[in-house]
Length: 136
Image (cartoon, rainbow, N blue to C red; front, top):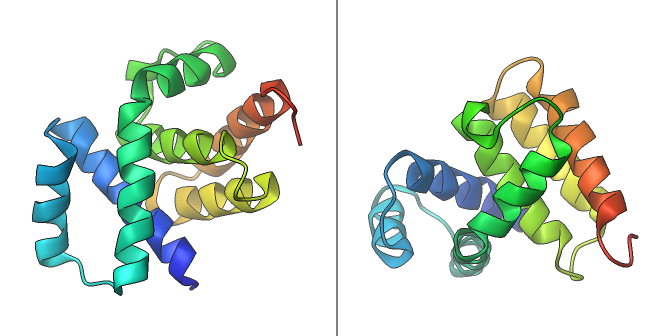
C-alpha cells in the first residue's frame, strides 16, 4: 500500500472518529497518533486531508445530499460519510487525478464498509465529479 493510500485510510478513520464524537481536530489528531504509527510524511498528508475535510464538512455534506438520491446524510452509515467526505474534499483539489480519488474511495469502502457501499459510493462520487466546475 502506498504512503498516500495509507494517509487516506488514516484521514478517513479520523473523520469517522470526528463524526462519532466531534472534537477539535488537533485534539483528535493527538489522540489518534498515540495509537496509530506512521511515517512523518504519511502523518502530515493524513492530517492535511482530515483537517481540510472537517473545515469543509458542511459544504461536503451538501454535495453528498444533493447527489445521494433518496438518502439524507444522517441516514448514511458513518463510515460511508467519512469516505465520501474525504473523497469529495480531495476531488475538489487539483493535486490528485479524479480516477485515483475514486479508486481509493471504492477500495476503502470494500475494506471498511458493507457489501453495497462500494457501488453506492462510486455512484455518488462519479456524479459529484461530473458536477464540479471544470470537471476532469
